Length: 264
Length: 323
Image (cartoon, rainbow over all chains, first blue to last red; front, top):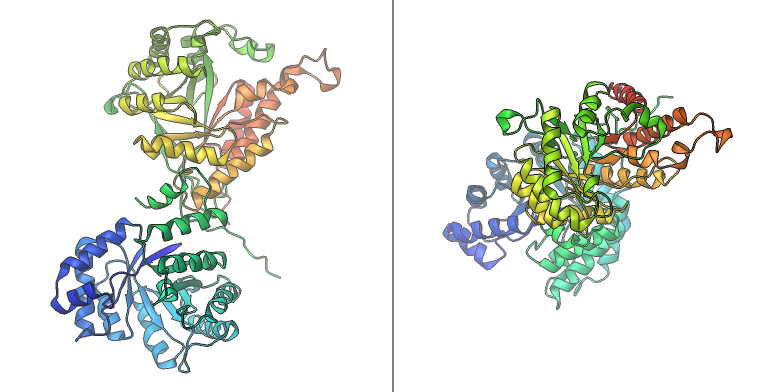
């Protein structure tokens, strides 16, 4: 299970303000805190309001790498910003993300190869996000074909079937779970799968509970990675317990503790 | 039609454990022995590296044992003296290590004092230059008196000390920490307890590269298939990055094989079973061979002929089968 820490994102007020004022303290605090909690990657998003996204991305990557050696997941719709970040990354990064749209594909896949980066592909195209699993899977298949076309390693391609908030788009969750299962049958080796977990609980009550319940379901459907709140201890305990129940880790009485201390 | 190659790809490997210490490392051994380090299933050289050759320790007791004729033939002349016994094991039978079991400490037996036991350990250390494994009698209370004294007497030698169990690991772990020895963690053919015990020992700040797993073994015909599946699970867990299972494995082969009726019963009792000596040797060799292929890194054995056969097999299995 690959955990991508979501917290360094301009959508959070403290980070948004830090990016505008070029104040490293909140960014570095969350870099350290997420590493301490067991993140494998840190998502880096300048937020929608950054004046100059390219410069903002550069500043974020440098600021994070001053205090933290985790690889980064560069999250932007501005591919110049992503490329600026990739140039500075000390370890191979993840590009977040590319939809099934030809001009964007032609920009992103060669860039991913050039910088030896992994890549998140979204199951959406110009028409938006499909309502059902079949159409999401069809878009995932297109991404697999594109990967072959560019000779991009399938195990470095992460399919994101795009989970939507349960309070407004309740019918999507089962379709996303079905897509997660389908993706594993598309090729051999199969692409990996990822979700932006917190999206499922956007503006709903019991956010943490909604997150971890959906995550357990997604793990059972074969999910490989998630962008999530790694500082939510109950969420991490849910992952540890799911791994035991899915026979991915050997049970021991202190299994929660072992999972929390992994990689340390 | 082309045959598809089925090759496993793994992300991690068994941790290496170094046994013994040379004079410049603070000990008196002529060399150290490293076990573990595999990044593949046992002997699948085409899937990863089989880094260090499995090694054989010969069992030495601190008193005269009641062993049957097949073993007595080779050890009777030395088993009154553990130093001579250890020398014979190394010089004549080619032991990589000596496994000295302090049975004499057993309160129901000779009930030797911790100081007497430590003296035996010191003498054996002087008698041979190979790294040493030292195990207590198995009586928890007595072991907790004896092993700290033994650990102190052997300070600097990086001994492999046994045996820690889930119900009794703190004293031995502390002794190993203080005097810088490695430790054997014994679990009863149970993967969960195996992992938990490693966690408990590690929580006392014992480094993971100084723990060796004893999964408990059974001889051929006495549950060896359960042992096999546990050892396989340990290795698979290791290769999939479970660091709390990623330790090398020690198997107490000689003890288990020679207490099987098929190994020790005389021909007069079971005429159909044939000659006891060759039967016993084969029982030990087959048990060892099976455990070797299940993933053993260190095998504790008894009969020189069984040891010779196993060594030959290790030679063959260490030849790369990469394709």
